[in-house]
Image (cartoon, rainbow, N blue to C red):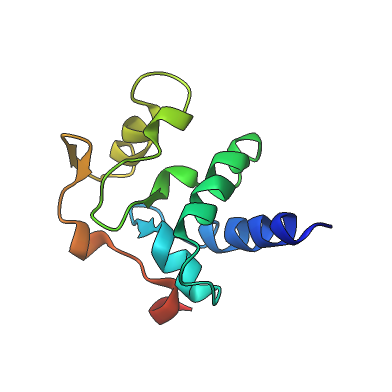
Length: 109
């Protein structure tokens, strides 16, 4: 297993723990895994997870609550639709009440 494959697997395992109706950020996952400067690599891992229906990649957004990864989902607004189906309000590609919905694996796990 390559180093990046191992990192992606760890990212996917953390993403699977994000509760229904909550969101986290690429950076929060990177910090939890001890790789604080690897938020972009977490994004790549989320993009690589689309073949695994058990990874809720739609729950991982940028540090400001923006749906920056939405173009990696099929359809025009699938990421937003998945979040809204969990009760998350999204306006202008940004999660509303982001601070209340934010799940930090560093504090929660």
